[in-house]
Image 1 (spheres, rainbow, N blue to C red):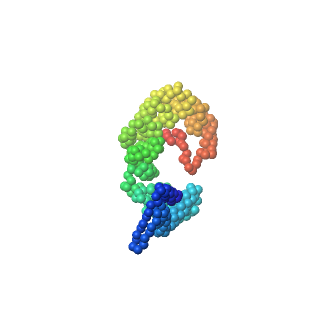
Image 2 (image 1 turned 60 degrees about the vertical axis):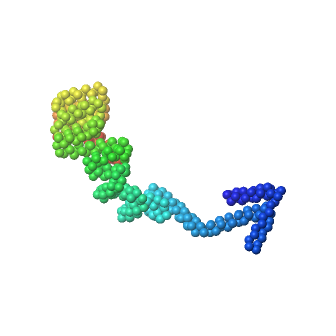
Image 3 (image 1 turned 120 degrees about the vertical axis):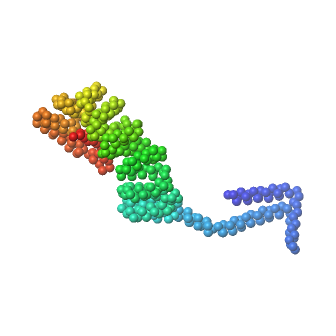
Length: 419
């Protein structure tokens, strides 16, 4: 298109010159050694334009011929790149569909001329891992690392993820610490390190990572809160294996914003009660329940050994005005009545709890009371029978037990009474 425009301009210029010189065509004489060329200016102008166009196309032809090998090479490279991209795309689709062998073959062959060979090798490593071929997986990860301009960060992260998946904790730790040296602020590296520390029970190391995890936004806010709670809960449990002083120390080190967190209050008071400091646990539970009603905390309140069982019972009974239909509160009141040697009142509370919500443990409490303190064997047997039937029915429900998710525990399955 440009060439046609240039020709049109040249012809227009020649026509213009001819028109200008129409009154006086002019005269051109060229002497070259013994050669003499004479013509009018108009004819000379036309010949000059024709000569210019001829030379232009001749030069273009020569230039195109000289550049032909390079263009052919570029065309061939582009063709191979497109073919590689097609294989890579098909390989990634096969990987998503779980066709591991097909994915591995397409991704490895597509890596040869791929613009992103690292992506191909990482996908091939995933396929090899799924096929149970760790040596081939490591080979692909090594190739991906050699293709990585960022000193193997992406390949190293993929390797660490696979090692964690296979519970190869020592190699995973080595990989992650090496990655951290070159990329100390990388969010995914920090996240994987935290996962490793949690899975291996290194709670102190996991806690030390929390500020960086928050700063780098390695986890979603709710995930970070859940992680922090889990860390402190385990630290409390570990401290309880030592002594009361250590338990207090961990609680005081905890950020004050977590002191009202339900799971942590539950864990702390449970450990206090186990270390014969039930009066302290009772006070904390009472204050926490005053600020925030919690089924798990009211459940725990029925087990702690307060300094004064009668006062503890009165405190709990005062909550009935605001929570008249709380099965857990009735169960706790029944247990507190047992501590104050009031079996008849305890049985009433157990029955009230069962009217709101039939639970196996409530039937068990009522059955134990009827059998051991009241001598009503037949009624006790009926309670045990109903409790057992409920337990069997719960276990038999579809969807209660799954491989993907742990069974959610009720408070009654978490906190056990101290002997």
